[in-house]
Length: 456
Image 1 (cartoon, rainbow, N blue to C red):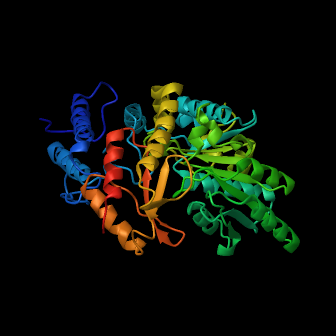
Image 2 (tube, rainbow, N blue to C red):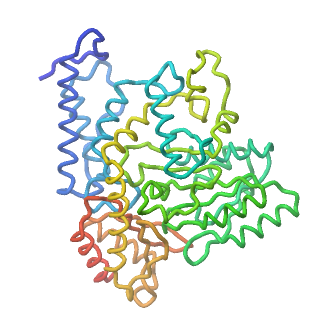
Image 3 (cartoon, rainbow, N blue to C red):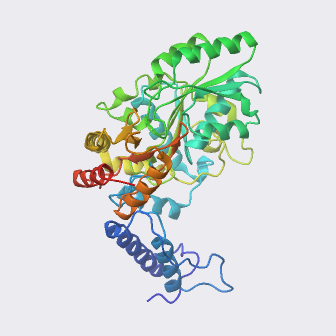
């Protein structure tokens, strides 16, 4: 038993107490993950530990007991029935890299605070640019989530437009992070103009063109048109090639929020799902949403890397100049940045190109199977794409869609399946995200059978 654990490990020799503590902590985590299938995706009862620190240091056994309590109350992404959101089980290598990142405690603010990691980030960003067919001048940075990546993209677009006022165009199914970005940028809510989607859930280019023409006639500046590659409810993909041509004609920045769908461009077998992605001016991509990279893992890629530096650079006068040309804190809104690149790098290395392809294609196959298993006379599936399936009852089954989806979600939860219940187009739906590699064909059969026989 550990009686004492010094707050800061010795720099002179390996600390045996730290080793023992980390081993015990790792055992807790491994047991928690390994026991996932025996419980529920979402716990209902647990003992919540004290939040505030005590007057004296807490003993090791008590620390671990508190950790166990919090883990008992945590959402369990490794459960085979965890199908509600874009939160897959974590890659084992990414878990390990997260630990190393914490232990290194490097800061990608500046090269001297993270020499090897700064170089690694630049090299990995270059790899992503190549995979997405971006030009040699492209670059980017890792961020702590798609919301920040989208915000940074809009700030760069506004800087390029050399104006503080203007509007942003997007589809009515675009992510809510754009609304936040408009607020943070100090723009009026009316500056975000949402364009209707077509039957497949994609933004209509003709209506986008009409909107751009109208803005031009009104003398209003369009800062950016945002396309979405993978909408949150339907997984729909906007027609990027057509929007690229449109934006070139109107000299408008095209940002693609590919937080969900961008990873499909990493494999030749699935890249056709996101055509034209590399022609955008900026791209958000979130490997955490399907590839199992531990949170947070997002990238903002731009067609011309120097535009990030131009927009966000302050000079960092308290740091020596970077040998690589720039510091990590000079290419985005974040100053202090943890070594999140480790989680992405080691996770991708663990998968390899073949593993990335398998992860992507198997998710698509599960979604296709689930659609096939659903009784189309009982449910209406929203047309969309990727590995998301949203559905609601057919009129002959239930006229009270809100009640039907609520009771069915509760019923499925008792059966060990967690689906989400988004409000879409004024109507509640149930949504399954089939990105969990632990979900087998048998699980899908069981889930579909529960839905098909459900009577509220």
